[in-house]
Image 1 (tube, rainbow, N blue to C red):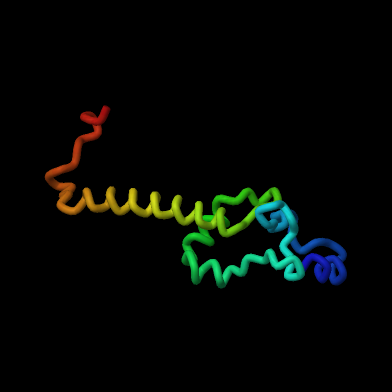
Image 2: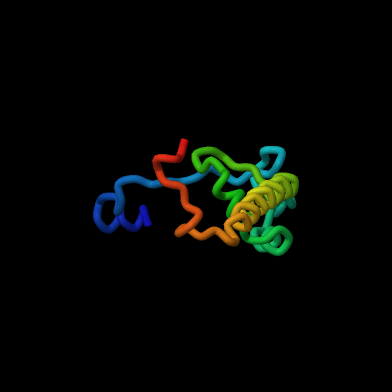
Length: 110
């Protein structure tokens, strides 16, 4: 850790650190058990699936505070469904594609 490295060696064990802001609720308040606004990742995975949680993390700007709520996760699940359905549609169109007979030469592409 940073503190251990500085104490033991007199300098940080790494040159740079990437960190993130706080995770906030939908109203911009800090997550707190006493406020009852904590979103449990385990519950999110059970309700929406781990891919929705991954998509939320990937779409968040780590440089700033990030918000999470049931409404936002529901929106992420709809985005994920659209991405997944589009990918499935595109893959299904490749069912009988044979590169030996169906490919287009580079010169024919416009």
